Length: 65
Length: 399
Ligand code: HEM
Image 1 (cartoon, each protein chain N blue to C red):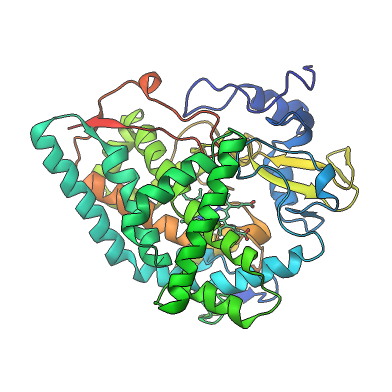
Image 2 (image 1 turned 180 degrees about the horizontal axis):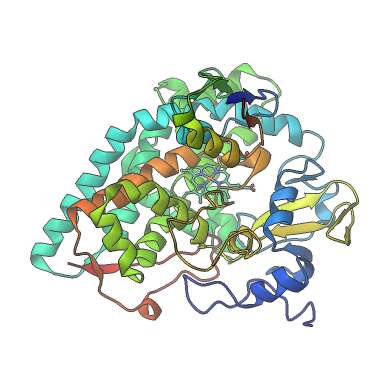
């Protein structure tokens, strides 16, 4: 699976980091999302989907590969 | 159906854990409906999950009003009373605010604070245990729900803890629908924050208020009044909401014993339990307030530029169109998202902090006081009515 994050849309809520700390981070300067692992293992799929679902800005897209 | 006058907010609710039954009918039959605000002005009440979420994400709505003197007033407290901010500069002011504050409340930083939050929670529970030695009935509100979030926000913002009784009283009065007194409290709060800001300017610390003072000094478009408004907002939002969610969470779990027992048996359930508390916990009776910045049609209803909207996240969070058995407290439910922290551009800046606090509180209560039980009936509890964030004033428990 593949993760994309739209840094323009991001509102810095940090929901993704709460849901999937191994996959996402927030930039120290402005809190905007950074994807740590863009092609995570299947075992991390549930976390990635949760981050996608709970993002308040709909800035995260997870696609099956 | 009912007339606008019947539909005057707030709708009476059976108790603090349930919503007014009218919401159910409105969601089904009139998801965008004309109502009268507590201040007596017209507004649109939005109750269905899809529309509430959509509107929260729609940039054609804002907190400011193109002609504020003509805007519908919402209530007679000094919070959520009507439009706020400047119509021309709202977007720029808001993104500056987010840029400034988001890093200070990032999820990573908040997770790093877990140890401090744990120490505060343990200290509170130690005091509950000590009080229990003299009187078996202990006030969880006074000894845990209130002091813990206050301790956390004081440390983060750099507010002296000895000022807590003062800002607590001011927050309480500011959020009460009392008209003049609420405004007097807000003004006093402004003066208090000004003194605090000047003390930080003279002697900066590693805290959010010091950062705000420095940012304001460095940016000529960032007005002093805007800075103090933000600081008041942070102190208010930083404790009122969390205090209430702790009280409501305890009440939900105590009145649904199986879920408490499940949490005691399996502490890993705490995150899902907290999300369910966030979904169903509805301390305030209103909703999130927006003003239309353009003419917009929503669910077949024409909303005119300047109209007020009350977006009921409480009703949306119990929408059967979104959640199976929506009124049931069920941490195992598959639908994991809710609007308890809002949605879109204004999504709660303190959400990660609030989560760390709530998770720590409920995990620690379940571990240290597994036999916790209420010492008063639900309908005996004193609930703050006519208050913007509601909540109980005492919460007697025993074990
Ligand atoms: C359980 C506790 C909390 C709840 C239920 C809560 C809820 C909310 C909600 C629903 C919003 C959206 C308002 C809107 O869209 O009009 C919001 C915004 C906000 N919250 Fe919280 N909040 C909580 C804790 C906190 C804490 C601890 C802070 C501490 C700093 C905080 C600071 C803020 C700020 C600054 C905003 C405004 C964000 C913006 O306008 O962009 N909140 N909160």
